[in-house]
Amino acid sequence: MNTYGQVAARILTHLVTESACCRRDLAQVLHVSKASVSRTVAPLLDSGLVHEGDPVEREEGGPGRRTVPLSVRPDCAYLVGTDLEGGLLRACVLNACREVVAGELYQVDGTWPVDRLLQEWRELIERVVEKAAVPRERIAALGGGLPGVVAHRGFSTRAVLPPGHWTELDATEPLTTLGVPSTVANNVLCVSEFEQRIGMAQGEPAFLSILARYGLGAVLYVDGRQLAGSDHFAGEFGHMRLFEDGPLCSCGKRGCLDVRASGRTLPDMTDLGYAERQSVLRDRAQALGCGIANMVKMFQPPMVLLNGVYTPYGEQFRPLLAEAIEGEFGSLPLARPRLVFGQQVEYKTAIGAALRAGVQFLPQYFADQLAER
Ligand SMILES: [Zn+2]
Image 1 (tube, protein in one colour):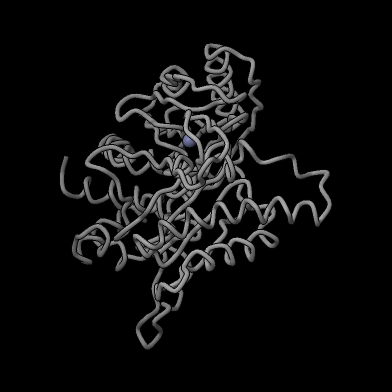
Image 2 (cartoon, protein in one colour):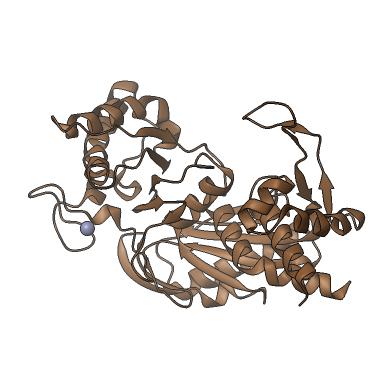
């Protein structure tokens, strides 16, 4: 592969998996010269693969600070994203401008055996791809999000699934059904990938990202990268044991944060009045605030980003959570993190999973496409 093809494939990948970007920023993030970026972009513009947007003023202002954002043609590649969490399967198809072309939510029945779940998942992915009606050869990759402790290699996890049993789940069949390169990660990593690339954490080098859905996961980003062991990631925030003599948790221990703050144990809020809801949310904020404050005391992330089941109650929940975190600091003179709620975006985890797969597989996909031209 020649240098032009390599740089072009990296530029195209970056334009798909991040927000629109100018030549100067591309040169900086891809560690190549601005001249090389300009040389490579010219034929991409000629071929119509890349478009120039209207010039914009850079935030730092001043003369000569107008830049031209570049974007890719929406149909030059598609990514499939899908995730399983608690009682729901989600799948969507993204175009190269990160727009959802087709998507579907599918309710899982907790009484199904694993085989049935995997079969329904495979059919859901095939249905959504069918609905998207895009050329199959343009589907570059599939990314999946899984709950629980995801194996380092392959597509399996060990997770608590409804109605609350530990389940060994090997999702190889649904996630490889399209015959495109595929990858999988824990759901909290997928949602954080969304936030970091196109959501609330863009340009934030350090933040604590929490996903409260059926389970309760967390990941810490430092210098723009997730903090993990040498090659493993757990994210099992919910199984921090914080409460003496707390109720029995799904992990077999007592006092876990999961029991008091996860979506699995959240009562149905739809019929609750304001005061009842306030009482439920206050208890949950107390528990979650304790867990968050413990992380903040260690790592001092400037931002804490929360996604999941509390998002719809954000206005009511935020002050309760902020107060609970504050209460945990005692007289420690530590910086208080900004508390940010992720926006409600349907398919957020699936989109994050798709972008994650894009980062990994689009360079080769585009290199092959360019070689064919
Ligand atoms: Zn536990």
